[in-house]
Image (cartoon, rainbow over the protein chains, first blue to last red):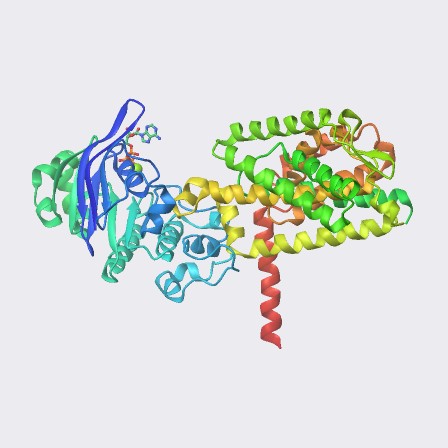
Length: 244
Length: 305
Ligand SMILES: Nc1ncnc2c1ncn2[C@@H]1O[C@H](COP(=O)(O)OP(=O)(O)OP(=O)(O)O)[C@@H](O)[C@H]1O
Ligand SMILES: [Mg+2]
C-alpha cells in the first residue's frame, strides 16, 4: 500500500532521515520505533507532505506521492494525527471532529458527526459543544484520532498517540487502535514504547539516528534480547517483567 | 434625529465594514495593516461609476465591492505565502502604494459642463448621487444599515458552515489545518477576497455619504483601527468588531469633552482591555458559553412543550 525507498530528509545541514526504506501492506499495523530525535516524525511528515523529502521515493498504491502538497496527499486517503499539537483549541469539540471531513464542500452548513464515531468515542459525545482546549490529555488524543477517522482515511499515520498519557489511558488508545485495524484500517504507528508497541503491531522498524537498524515481524523483534537491552538500557529485564 | 447623530451612526455603520474586513482575516490567523486600501479602492471605483459613468448607486456599490475584492484576492495570492510578520508588512506596503498612486492619479471627465473625477491630492469631489436625487442623510443611513445587516447575515451563515470552521482552523493552527487536507493558502486567498469585498462596500458607501474622498482619509490609521476593533470586541463572533466600532466611533466621538484626547483615551482603553481580556470582549470561549446557555434553554423549552 505504502512504499518508501531511500528517503532522506534534512534540516539545513542536519540529516534527520538518512536513507530509510519501509513498506506498509494493506490491513497491517506497522510501527516505527525509536528514541527522541531518531527521525520518526520526519518520516511521517515526508509521507504526509508536510515536508518535502530531499531524496527518495514515496509511493502510495503505486502512485508516486513524494513532494505533493499535504492537501493532495490527504485527498488520496493518507491522514496524519500529529504528536503534541493535536487540536484546534479555540474550536468546539464538534468542530474539531468535523475538521477531518475534508471531502465535504466548504459551502454547506455543518452537519452532525457520524453516529458510529459517537459510539467509538462515548467520552466525547456529551462534550461536543465545549471548547477543545478544555479537554484532558486523554480526551484530546481520542478526539484527534476521531478527527483523523472522520476523513475516512485508508492509511492512518499516528505519531506517538500515547505521548503524555497515563498507562491506563494509553492502554485505551492502544485498544482503540486495535479495533480500528479490525475494521479494515491500515496504520503506520510511531512510538517510543517498544514493548507495548510490539504487542500491538504486525511488523516494526527500529530507527536510530535516521537509519533503520532492525526490522521484521513484531514477534521476531520481541524475542531479540540484544535489541531490547540496547534499546531499553540495563533496566530492560526488570521493566520487561514488571509489565507482564 | 439631527444630522450630527445621523452622521455618527452612519460613520459607525460604514467603519463597521472595514472592521469586519479586518476581522475576517484575523479569523484565518493573518494580520493585515492594509484593509484601508480596499476601502479606498471601493470608494474611488464606486464614485467613478456613479459620478463619471452616471450608473445607478447599486451598480456603483457592486463595482466598488468587486474591484476591491478582486484586487484583494490578487494581492493575497501574491503575498499570502509569506509568513506572519512578512505578510503584515507587505499589506501595509501595498496600502501605502495605493494611497500614493491615488495622490497623483488625475482622470477627469466633463459631466454637465463640470470636470468630475479623481484629481490627485485634491481628492475625488462631487460624487453627488445622493443630492441629485434629494435623498436625505437619514435615508442613506438606512441603506448603510440594510447593507450591514445583509453582510452580517452572510457572515453568520459562513460562521455556521464548514467554511467558517475552516477559517477558524487556519487561525488556530495552520500546520494542523494543512494536515487535515485543507489548502491553507487557497482558503486564505478566499478570505482575503471576501474581506476586500467588505471593505469595498464600506468605501463605496462612504464616497456617496460624504460626496468626496481623498487619499488622506484611508491612511494607515484606518487600517490599524480596523484591527483594533476586532481585538477589543473579540473574535468569537462577527458582533465583536461591531462592539469595538461602537465604543470608538460611537461613544468616544459622541462624548464631546474627550475630543482632542480621543486617541489617548482609545489607546488607554485598548491597553486596559487587552490586559484584563486578552482575547477581547466576545472571545471564542465566551461565545461557546453563551451558545451553550442558549442551547440548554432551547432544550428545556423543547422538553417542556
Ligand atoms: N523543524 C526542524 N528544524 C530543524 N531540525 C529539526 C526540525 N525538526 C526536527 N529536527 C531535527 O531532526 C531530528 C529528527 O527529528 P524528529 O522530530 O523526526 O524526531 P522524532 O523521532 O520524531 O523525535 P521525538 O520522539 O522526540 O518526537 C532531530 O535531531 C531534530 O532535532
Ligand atoms: Mg516525533
